[in-house]
Length: 223
Image (tube, rainbow, N blue to C red; front, side, top):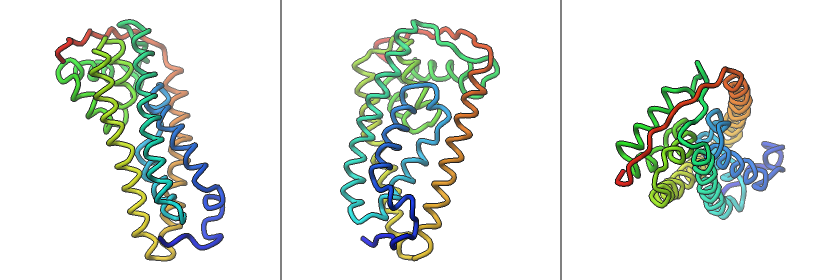
C-alpha cells in the first residue's frame, strides 16, 4: 500500500483514522435515527472515508474495523428511529410544503411497508431519504419489531462495508497517479463539508415550516 507523501494533504493526514472514525460513526447513527439525517450526505461520506483511509499505511485494518463500527452505528440508529416512531403513536409530525419531511413522502414509505414489509426495510437502506424515514414510519405503523430488526440489520451489514470498501479500493487505484489521490480526496472532502453545511441549513428551513400530523396505517404482521 502506497501512503500519501508527508505533507501532501496535511490536515487530513495528521488527523488520521481517529477523526474519520468519529465522523463516520456519528453521521451513520444520525442518518438512521433522527430527522436531521434526511439532509446529510451519508453515502458520499462513507465512500470519502474509504478513500481517505486508503492513504494510510494501516488503512486496511482501519477500513475493516470501521466497517464493523459503522454497521453497529446503523443498527443502533435504526432501533432509535423505530422507538421514536413507536412512541409517537400512529401520527408523525410532517412539515407543510416540506421538501422531504412531508405527507407525500411519509405516505410513500408507509405504502412500501404495507406492500413489501421486510423487503422494503432491506431495500430502504440504499435510498437516502427513505433510509431515515423508514425506521420512524415502521415504528409508528407497529411493524413487527423482530422482522424489522432482522431486515434493518441485514441492510446495515451490507450497506456500510460495501461503500467504505468501494472508496478504499478505489483509493488504492488513485494512488498510482501521484497528484490524483490528494486532488480527489480534497475535492470529495470539500463537497462533503459543503453538503453537510447545506444539509443543516435545509434542515433548519424545513423545521421552520408549519407542522402537520400524518396518520400512519398499521402494517399487517404478514408484511
